[in-house]
Amino acid sequence: MPDASLSATLSVAALAAVIEWRVGYPAPVFAWIGHPVMWIGALIGRLDRLGNRPGWSSPGRRAAGFAALAIVVAVPVGLACGAVWLMDRVLPRGLAILLQAVAAGTLVAQRSLHDHVADVGTGLRGGGLAGGRAAVGRIVGRDTAGLDRAGIVRAAIESLAENFSDGVVAPLLWTALLGLPGAVFYKAVNTADSMIGHLTPRHAAFGFAAARLDDGINLPASRLSALWIFLAAPRARRGAVWRALRDDARHHRSPNAGWPEAAMAGALGLRLAGPRLYGGVRVQDAWMGDGTPDADIGHLDRALVLYRRACRIEWIVIVALAVYITVL
Image (cartoon, rainbow, N blue to C red; front, top):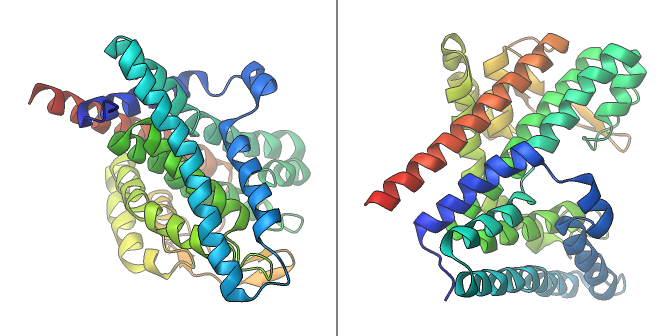
């Protein structure tokens, strides 16, 4: 059996966080073999074409979606378990953990998320509204053509908060619990949700299982991400963070995104979320936080500082737990 002890999985998670932050996903590697999410996405796309037939009934498409999700999870997780089993059998323990951490780090987005959000500030400074809209359009799904300066900054900060939860905290949490297979399991479900978990005529039934499972496995990470942001916030702002979490987080249209967004809003003295446009349709979402909606580049800079602190806090906690479990 693979070495699934909590000491090993925590060590894998701690090393994965450091490796990904320092190295990211190297462009030459991407050009050579692509990215694991692309491989999972290709499998999902094929299953969507094969099993999501427009002529089928809604219950039939929902059943097909459950079957597709089972395949999407079983194939990559099975490969990950096999790889861990082989590494644990033929390699020294330290080297096996290191290689598993390198693999798990490819499924974490600390560095890329930071850089993409920072690019929005760079775009605004160098290219004005057009530059800011172009940069933020690469990281959000909403309509960006009509966003003013404050709207661009809010969109970038909201993306930073939400993706801190599902792009950083969640994969590291599942890695800490289950090692590399845990990271792969999470990323398979999360990728399925991003591709087919939409309330559109094509995917409302077929993507039902992916959307519901993604909500469930992201629930603990969303609360943890709010905690890390709370601890990273200046002491003078922690009361505002707590009030935003208490009063606003549960009113977000997403069962999970409201927690990190509300925490970020309170920490920065902003109002985030609220009404916005997706595909020309106005979505009426609740506001997070009781601050100003007039966000500026200074708020974006402070959000990135807060994000870096929150990432460090999470890493320190993982390392502390790994050390504690090891010496028990």
